[in-house]
Length: 339
Length: 264
Image 1 (cartoon, rainbow over the protein chains, first blue to last red):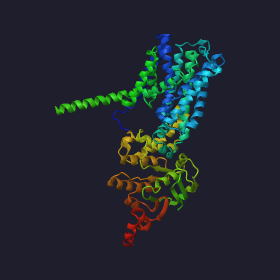
Image 2 (cartoon, rainbow over the protein chains, first blue to last red):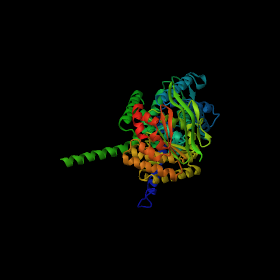
Image 3 (cartoon, chains in turn cyan, blue):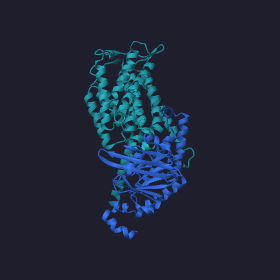
Image 4 (cartoon, chains in turn red, green):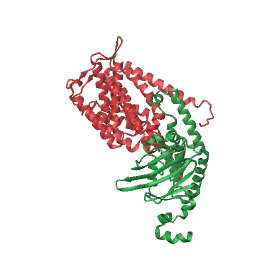
């Protein structure tokens, strides 16, 4: 559309972007070779897992503007589906992960239909209730392990048995595939329809956008990815503890809040921001693992700071800094002119 | 010629408040119809009934020969209906180009799988939509603004984007809710010329609400007047301007009767 003096200019951002991605992925893939098991379990595996969840949740929250406070419910459904299916070595782990995504997606569709007319705080409250309900049921049901929990064996592929370190490659693979699928979806006609509904559902419907279909779709996609993330969690964590799950930071309300924090702090409606946010919040949780209340305070403060001063989140910081720098320089120049 | 839009005995009330009372309206294909009346007369309510946002208690709405009284709002774009809004209702956070691309939504029929995997079918549809939208942006002199956030534009430009978005579904009938409201006199003349040109170029039927009588009377082939939800007059602009009931509705009965004889 825009003419450019250099006929090869269009290649440049593409080449650099692809090169940067290849380097980044290669660096990430090397991490399990050099890091400790506790670093893998405390940071690498959860960061990758939550990135997958945040990618889906950002389509819902950032794309359609529907704030869910119940995605820990889908994460738990995925975790327990995979945990139960693979705990007695009946299902191969990858099939159990797939099944977890499908089951969570079905729950997402079932919850999405009645809540599709709800907007703003009403939608948040409905999803909050769902999250609490799932946690409550899992915390008391005997098939979910009850007070003893469920032990999940290390996943096997042929003769190879994964451990906490090598399983990161599986997580990384799923995260990369998810990133591209979500990126394509967001930047295609489907993503446009999501955002159009967020901006003006009247105008979007006049344009032919089927409100129910797209709201339920966004919800179901985010549920599928939360379910897959939960299933991955079950595999590297090796143990699912359902007791006290309403207040637990893995399956309860604190987890749902942390998921929203990932999306908001990373950058609303930004595919890349979802990953940054998941990594950032996981890092905060890892470095403050002995002081969980401090971690929650910190990312609570991050949400407030982002909403007040940096709506673009982490991913918007470069642009914000540039603008602030330009502003400062402008002021200095104006001051010189006056002086 | 056949009618592009037929509204029969349409009644709408909210609780005890009657918004529309047995309203009739028909619009010949290829013509420009005007809908006027004092504030609160029910003009926008009628538009919202036609777009199926409101469910009237009584009456039928036809687009051409098709009864759409029971259709859902998103289905009407397929039957050639488009609309602009009084407060533009642009997708403010989206670029100008993306706004027009949403207008072309029904021409792409996106599928999740196709979009997520960038299947050739999805890419072909996207390319077709982009070329359609680019053509419209050229037509409306908006090409230079294609990548600007729609919410950042001044009102006059936002109204043009709204029109381009409406045209992107290749409609045969466009409802225009106050296309000239908030514009300065030169912008108003521009939009009148633009509407006239578009109507010929794209072979459209237009139904427009506006408070600017010069615009309505200069542009419309036929004008319908609403007052308190009732149709009080309908006909060519010349006759409407002299109709004592219309004068009474706009000016109050005593002034109208004082004015009436001199006008005759």
